[in-house]
Length: 164
Image (cartoon, rainbow, N blue to C red; front, side, top):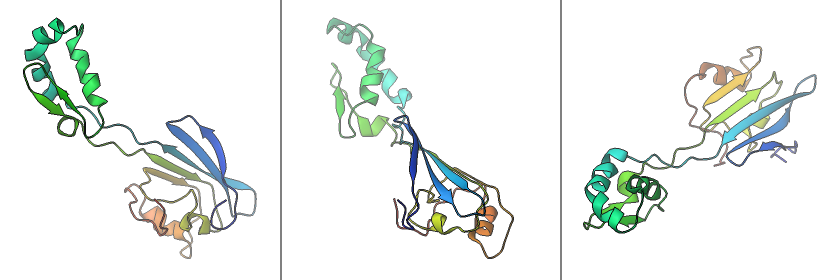
């Protein structure tokens, strides 16, 4: 349930992507949707790791590593405070060679709605960090819709609610 007592439905949960829906206020039944990706791991900076692996290939093979370049995957999957020690004494810290996690994207799709309270509340339609906002509406200066329309195309980083 959202802050205004409207139901929220979990439509799909694929682990890394989920879709939620909630009814919108309108003269006919209409539903709004939020498609949200989970955060993704940061990218490895291979240009910083490959030279270290290449100069350690003989020692790594001698130690039983069949494919030394696959160590990049090990380094990418280290915990943030993790490190990998190479035979020549080089220590690579994950924080030095892996970018921070990338925030998952969020898409909000709404039909025409007579009231935007659900958007302004702590509901699933929070516009914080929305990548794409799609809404069918007839502009009315009394509604928040005009504000959203004027800000379309720019990342919406502020939200009136205190959700995360």
